[in-house]
Image (cartoon, rainbow, N blue to C red; front, side, top):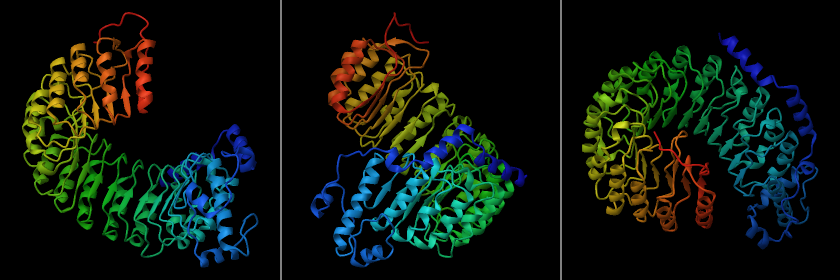
Amino acid sequence: MDSTVSTKGKESVQKRSPLDLIMNQLRRKASFTERKKPAVGRLFRPSESSDKRNGGIPEVKESEASEGKENNEPGKEINDTDDEAGSVVGWGRVKQFVQKLGKTPHSQNLSLCHCDLTATDVVELATLLPFLAQLEVMDLSWNDLVGGSLKALTVHLQHVGKLRVLKLCSCRLTNQDLTALGEALDCIPLIEVLDLSWNVGVGAGNFRHFTEHLQPESTLKELRLVDCQLSETDITALSEALPMLSSLEELDLSNNKLSIKGMENFTSSLGSTPQLKTLKLSMCGLSKDSISVLGQALGSVPALEHINLSCNKEAGGGLTMLSTNLALLAHLRSLDMHLCCLTKEDVLALVRVASSLKELRELDLSSNKSVGETLQNLLQTLPLSQITKLPLNNCALSTHACHALATAMQMLKQLESLNLSWNKCVGENLKQFLEALPPDCKLQELRLSSCNLTTEDVLQLESACQSGVLSHLKQLDLSYNGSVGDGGWMSLFGKAAPLKGLEELDVSLRPSASLSVSPWLPALLEVLPQLSSLTRLSLQHWALSSAEIEKLEKIIRKKNVILECDRLATSTPKAAG
């Protein structure tokens, strides 16, 4: 089976349409200068004061400047008699290269993601590295044509010895690129973050080309391999490399299909990473047996603070073994198991150890229907006084569960995010939650999408705004609540001025709905100038006339607010169902 996965992986990398191959060849041959026109008419004279004001000249020590001359290649503008002037001219070349790509030059952070880089550009970038001696972050992500040409860059990485972060997401990396990157690790001894996500070529048995170059006591702290189509062979290579990564603090293998055998190999080496704090295995096809295998290994990584096992729909029924060992994680701060088809027994197993999770801050069990009937049990054991994030969207909450949560709200003094979306019972019961909010409420995010809210619910929300308990609110989602009458929206917007920190407001309707904004738009137009922090306003699927859109845009244009609306009122609006 492993060989089949390997073959498919290689075919996915190599197969491209004839047009794609032709266009790639043309683009690789096109020089950087021919493809990009200068973004500025001229370069400023390379004097120290002017260049520092316009982007900052990296500080180049005498020894570094000397090294730059010794490794000088054709095209490098370095003055043999004036080190300072040479470095300034070199920085001018860096500025020209980066600005032509529509980016802002920075001596410590080079971000060239989504720049359509070609192999020619990679070579030119390599010649500029001697002038980036202070570089700490390099991001070349989302440039398909970087794949196959990475060695042209890695052989010059000795010039950026301070590099700490390297991101190469979605670059179509090949096994030759992985080898070149592995061989260059010695040149960047301070590297802490490496992101190779969304590169199919990393999988299919190719990951060993990188891992075989890892040395003991590697400084790598974060390794991300999201959606790399890792095979069992690749997971084995990773497992064998983990003893070299004793400093690893974050590992993200999300969106890679992990078999039970792969999980066994992987977890057997987890003890080699005693400093691991974050483990992400979202959407990895984990079965309940895989969850049990992971649970048995948790005792070997006591420093774990964040675990993400979300979107593993076959994990239901496997939480008993996992939850038993969660109690060994004294520092666990967040557990994400949304959309895992958890059973009632799974949640009750978590209930039994919840009181031991003294440091827990975030628990995401959303999109698990069984939570609705077990929520009261869970709330009785969680350390509510320190919970900051509690997503309960799409949990089939009952009226009884809503009452239990409303009672618990008084204890949730640190709560910053509450998501109750897609729970119909919230409608007509919102008053319970709002009245239970503590006076010093820290709530920043409140999501009530598709909750069957009534006009009375929105009036209660308006009252909460007036009382000041929502003064810290930044995101408010009231979308897909077409049952709210015009009077509710008019009252809410008329009294929304206290929401000074509100950044995002969403009152969109369902796509099938068509209601007019005319009755309450004047109230919204009046309050918008007072919402000084607002950056996004979503009114999708409401019917607006061209005149109404013009009035809205006139106000938000001054505030630089993103407006999302998509329909003009062309006929008599119908009532929402």
